Image (cartoon, rainbow over all chains, first blue to last red; front, side):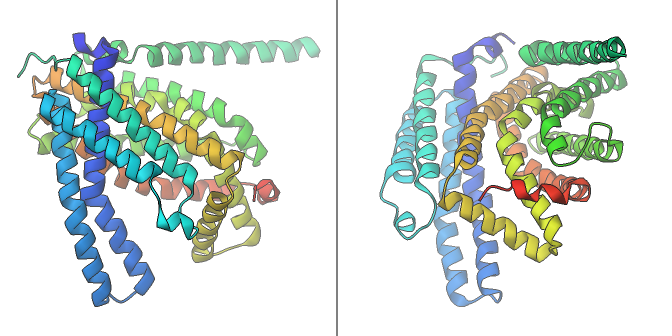
Length: 141
Length: 255
């Protein structure tokens, strides 16, 4: 269990787990939660709701699969996927954390939560970048 | 008489101190603790040792939450409250361990159930007191809402609407409790990811499994399967808290 004591390697693996969790969240929970919210709003499935659900799922599920693929790349320390992960996490951090939000202007989610999410994503990107300096140490591969 | 009180206090403090030291050493060296569990040949003994650590962890959690419980009318000697809570949390732990074991099986890693429970306790359940500490403010608000629900005699639908309304109100006008609870949950996130990473590493090494497969199994378990168990586990826990909470404390609800 030599690599278990390497804090940087553990931090990179932790971000790999975080990205994988985001991936499953996008691919499974986001469509399910949206379906539940739409059902609660309209009770009877209307055509508009079904179309909206299909469109959002069509974006969310591939995004989730992409994040899961990136998560595997972080775990295996593949440099191309690490670079891609850093880029995507930074972009997500800017978009979700600090970019203009129309819902916030209309009294939606508070800015504080969004900024925290943005900071978390930037931090994750910085840790993933450290993965380029630490090879995956596993004798079984 | 006062020396008797001091003797009692001393014996309680010694017990709590011993408990705290045992828990602290386990929490400080999780990899070492996990190795010591996995080195035990007998499977029942491995589970017994893991559950012993979980019991220590639960008792420390109880000490952490004691002021909150007392504030809402639940004393240390309310065994009718603490025993069911311990039982539900233990069942939740076994359920989560089962989800992890199932996920490993799905990803073709032939882990044994006692190993999974031991690993799960060493890396996750051991940190229950820290989780409680981080979610102190969340629980403070939650107990306040629950006490109000009880005081006003709301039914399930009204209670759900009230919970949503309170959450929206607190997010629209963020106060110390809201900001503190958000900060602590974001601080706890990297910690929980690190625990999951340690589980995946240990499993990859113990079962000579590829890292990618082990990590994928752990991520699948923690993101898709375990939340279902936790959601189910929360129903009896919240009901028990509702039954025992003092409705008189509802005035403490912020907002």
